[in-house]
Length: 312
Image 1 (cartoon, one colour):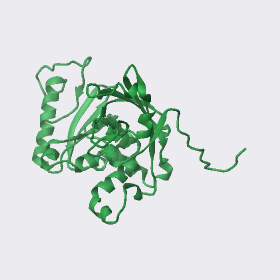
Image 2 (spheres, one colour):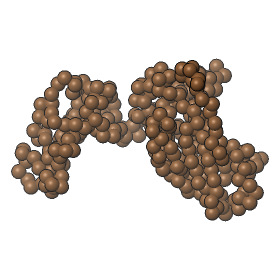
Image 3 (tube, rainbow, N blue to C red):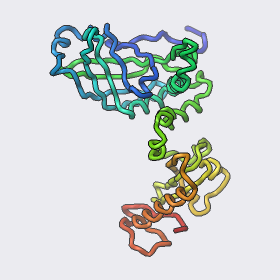
Image 4 (tube, rainbow, N blue to C red):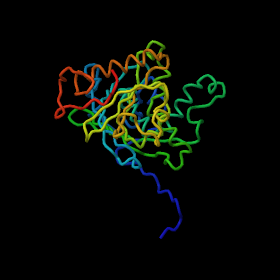
């Protein structure tokens, strides 16, 4: 019996997979990887000969499995594998795999330390170039995925899963990393001022006991009790953790059990934020029963929700 504590088992690559260092281009701008030449060669001449100017792009599903520490949840994302005929490059060095933003979001959530490191390298691009640093000179670690591409009936089947991930206990600031990933700071920083004004960040539904973790300010929020079928719309200049401290009861809807936050752009004025709240309440009153409005709602309690707001 091995009595050593915290013993790390050898990392083994699964059959037919190749290792992939998690890097900036997987989160920011490009959202792509280049398939290693040695791996493309393993597809055999029979497969490679079928790829030409008329057969050089494949819309695919990416089968993704979250890390072991996150319960190996399976997801599917859209992607595109392409062959680029670049002068001076061999065919086997010219395959690229691209994906949409939703896969980048998932990777950022599941590998937050790599995401933050990538963001640091991106923001400090000029500084780190002067220092002759590479991305992997920052942070003292290198997380990896493993990827498999199998050709079946002339179409690629692609799988991503964990190869090496820094455990949360060893991340130093795991909660900060997770929050940064959840709000996609990289995506926000890369946007123009016009895009930032148009963009809002909408959170998933979260349990009430998570409220103390909410630090972002200038929000529209929704409070919900699914069992009672009741909903409340609100606005706050503060963060939700300050708006609703765990020791404080809600003035008109203390039975809420879940919440979702709509984070407004930082330039949003107080007048605009209040206007958005009023619009949500007005729309809610047209859909759901509410004691302040005499109009007959579209949905009854059986099929809808009861609006708990006590102001018009």
